[in-house]
Length: 274
Image (cartoon, rainbow, N blue to C red):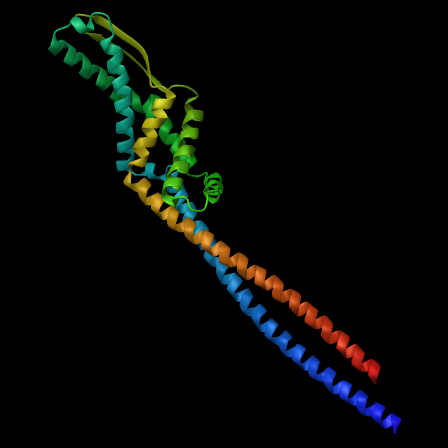
């Protein structure tokens, strides 16, 4: 009788163990299905992230100088730079001995000559180096991307992106000129004869401020800022979704591993009862 009771008890335990094992196996199957879903979700999110990064890099190239590929943008920036140089040249001319005492029509003619010299010399001495800087900079988007990632949450993205891009342009211009941009002005004038104004220099601080202001006003730069802001927001959102999906995948994998261990332990225990 005792043996019969023991056999019945063992049979009950085995049935309970089998039920538990079945329940755990069902959970394990559900986890495997969820892991498969998560992998598909992670792959899709990674593709979305790659697309967002590519989009952002495209706009970053525009921010850092790609706008200079367009004649209208080049002309607008060049005009502001020319005005800054011309202003300095006319100031130097006004201080040249004897100039102020000349008849008005003579002075106006000399001013036109100075403006023409600035126009002719500007590209070789000053503006072509600016274009070279922008061309090189537009290919160096990695550093800009790092800085964009560092924008503080809550900051105005468009304002922050524009300022960061202009900071990169300013740094590159300062490195390229290594001092004040300048050009030489000397010519022969009525009555005064040889006028040598020397090198007309625009202080680098003034120069980069002029370029920053000119670039900021460009429609193409504004379009790149807006595009970069949208792409950055998308990239950060997708990165958050991807991190959450990967974290859930790690958690589900750990639960699956634990379930496999429990099933193995129960099977071993069930065999020991036989």
